[in-house]
Image (cartoon, rainbow, N blue to C red):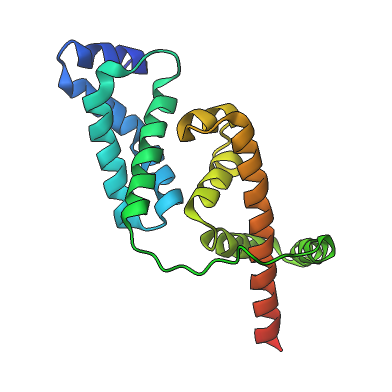
Length: 191
């Protein structure tokens, strides 16, 4: 069976063939859930946000313009829907905003990470990512895990490209701070 383009399905939907939307849902369902999960970090919330995003996309399809790809346009809807859901959540998370870490301490943390096995590095990296603000976690995962370009992340998040670069840079620094705290806790628990 021949695969059709997103544009083909969009034209068919706009002509009245609502069944064509199922093709887009099938194509982007996993990616929508994945992006929502990066922000919300809770499976049920991520599933609901992805479903809500599909409904919003379907209802707004007539406003889609071919200035960007459907994927990028849709991911912006997923991102905004997830952020809205996140804002309604009542979290009492502790932050470490005021903590300053010297360049030497960052270097020590990086050296300690290099000494770990690949599996341990991945475990600590995931722990560190979980401790980040959801937006920071999402930006890092979109850039490093999903290989989105800065331009694509800009379109998805509604931020300028320079703002995306700054936020990713700051998120990386926060991740290093979190990794330092995690590694200190691990060393203390071993002693």
